[in-house]
Picture 1 (tube, rainbow, N blue to C red):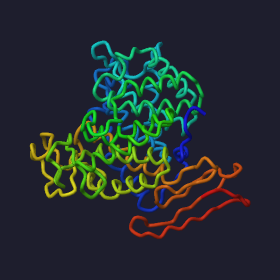
Picture 2: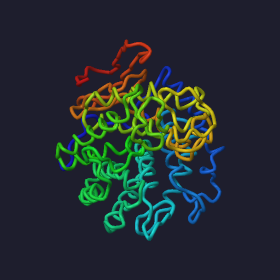
Picture 3: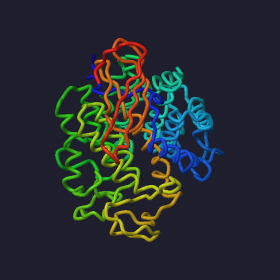
Picture 4: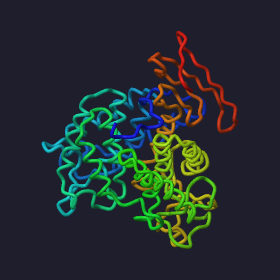
Length: 428
């Protein structure tokens, strides 16, 4: 096959039912900011929203950022009200498709259509397809990617965010290719890598923005699945190590870049955005799937358990924009230039920033989806630890229920029970 196989394969959303503290966390998200953000976020206001109405006056990354976590939370908890709300937004996306294949709000700069917000929405679409099997997702993505292939390189992935984060687009192309096998998608994959910022450099990154580094270091490893060049895989390991060698000699798995990493600002008072935490977790989960390397599970757990919880209130009703390992202040003062970004960014605030306010939602749902994954030899792997029940087909296609019982990370005892109607052999 043209693409190298994933070492671990994510099960369809909803296959894993979390239990214990993790389920409680997800329920707190549902009852807190994630589940009720539409009631307070100006960016989720439905009236004149360009994600729902052609020509709407507002609509960019905020809706898909939120929906990425909200929708998956809905599917995992099988919450009818949340699923219905998710469909409202997705139906708006389906209705927005243009004859040339482009979808979503039409945001143009210098004659170029903006691509970044659509990258996020494509991930929402993939989760919806896993849940529903709706063929419209495949049609939308196929036509959109055909349009992308027609865009001249000089106008493709040129703006700052989309240029940095083209790897998210690349991953979606692979996802579709593994379903349809359409050969044009591999040509598009080459184009995306060619036009994306170069994250293969040894020491000088394209930029030092905390979310970009956390999100984009995986792009070369993603491209490695097509190129087969081990240097691309090594580049992702290098960027991950470089940012921590220079700015990350602190507990919690992250690095100091409070908006951007700056020379000399290396002590534990420097922080990271909440967006940075959840994007690092997502990158670690993808790197784990690409490589099978348990290092990425360790890294994901480090951020999930030791950094991300400090960025949100225990009831998930407020969050902080910037959180640092040694943070003794939680106020609404401007701490620039101590932190890079000027503003009241150390305070817990349900309205905190148009990005993190929405993007925080993906953290625990995505973590839950990666607790147990399939392996190419028709087995299962418990990749991240957490109490759960998993329905999956293993071996020669027999369905089992795997139950994982644990209070991890508060204790290190983990018990697995396999429930099967008949004898079955499978790697675990």
